[in-house]
Length: 231
Image 1 (spheres, rainbow, N blue to C red):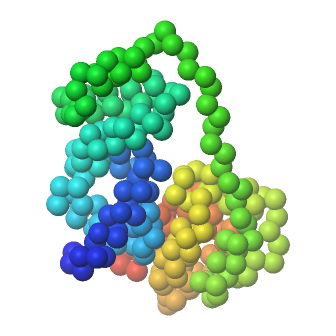
Image 2: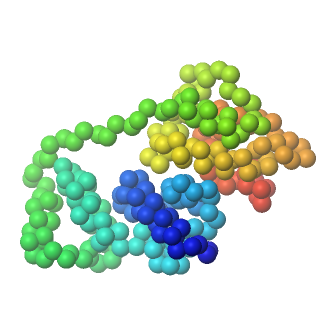
């Protein structure tokens, strides 16, 4: 994978920012090349996870961002200031896998670690971050823009709204319109989904796309042009 230096740096900055928001434990086992690409506002980049592993930015077993516990230690503590047990769980996971989390602050920080991890202190409840409302009409507009060959949405019923709402809420990275624009652009490249095959598939519309089983197959790459698993 050969990128200009500025493009590679831009991708890594976007990727790191996304990771801090969407997988604060640095674990990548549940993410595909497609989702990692979308995280940086790109179209699908085949082999991006393997490339990140080859350069040492991602560990392979378990698949996670290299030394995440070291580099994000203070961020994790600050993010979970009122949930020290959560911060402790994330950092302990790295201690288990690597033997330790390097501490560059010295004994003073060690004392703070012990204080943070005390179980006899009941922290005040922290309000759960609210999930932004799903912008149905904006997503429908993006669907029409990038997939004009598919049936237009004439009625967006409560049942259809529920399918889209669920996909929106399932993962943090899906809660922005850039992700959905990249997603529809990705679908537009599929000859099968867009009916550009000898025996055209004609069932694909927005409701079909956001139904759970179909959505997962699309995310997993089952309908890419070099694959035959169209079932």
